[in-house]
Image (cartoon, rainbow over all chains, first blue to last red; front, side):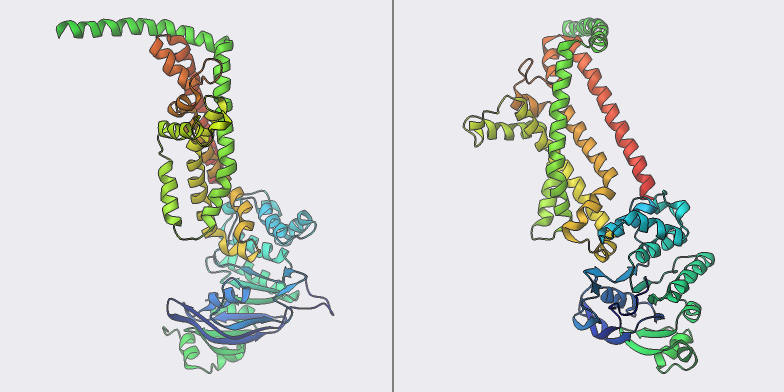
Length: 243
Length: 249
């Protein structure tokens, strides 16, 4: 899980001048930041700012028109295996049991002893009792937990989460936040988007604030909330609508 | 005119009297496992099951390819295949007849009027159903799963096993529909099989022949088996969709 000393790491991640265009519109414009090892970084901003797109670009699901996503080692892989994982806003649940969802991911990445690893992940995230249930019959909170367990089982150094508690009730949200804190405490690097400013304060050490496809702020969480530099961030925190 | 109506009534009366006796004789054929009767049922099932198996072997990969690929003319191809689902069996039979007839491209194989010819004709009938259903099912699943599977490095053909497995219940229903279509059709097997006694005579062609000859017991007995088969197929399809709905959430 936690990379041992001396083991190569894909981090820091260097995002440099990302440009993304769709149908003539510039959705991301010159987005640059560096993500070192460890900690929770929150990617925030109003709807349509480009938060999810930034995660997808980092994960390699889409290609930018300009700029680059640079990993410390190779292309984000070590020994041929992707070392960063992503949990989507709406968890993708295969039409199989909870356990089979874990097995599928482990086997796709050719992990040895997948059954063993699946059981460890089930136990780690309190899903053992649900192992045989069809995954799509789980509650929203349970599905999100399974999605995180599935990503965790792939032993990523960097876990990207796209609004992990967007559709969850307060109880499930608290569970997910506890999980994220625990993973960060174990040394996993977290990059997450969220709309919940309270969640940012509770979880993150660093804030990346995106507005209209541009990175307006990159600050430690305390400074971001106390003394935002950009007028957009000030307006966002004040709850003024931004377009 | 008066006389004609009277005749029609009388003949109806006679047929319905016959029908009662015929029904008894038909049930007799079914419960006593009459050898000729069993031979016909056996051949029908063998031909249709083989055709469905072949259609699945060809149609599942083709449907998967069609679901995941993008090329010019794809939409036209999809419309064509959807249209072929309604291909009249006699036309499919005619098409295969022309292929297999002595002067046709596959004539030298000497397959016309054999069970193999019937399998080919029924495969042609079932194939569009399998391709269209696989295409539709997998395309929908791919929309939903695309990002997750790509994230796991499963894109293109590497995604196909996952998609086929997760579409298993819908695909099973499609194969059952294909089986239903093939086992009920008469036109295609009649044209390419020739309805030769003890060789290419299936349930449907026997019913057509024996009814026109007036030998109702055999026709009715086979009709009962066909109806039971249809019921069984529908029950299986219903069960598959119920179990599928459970997994689909």
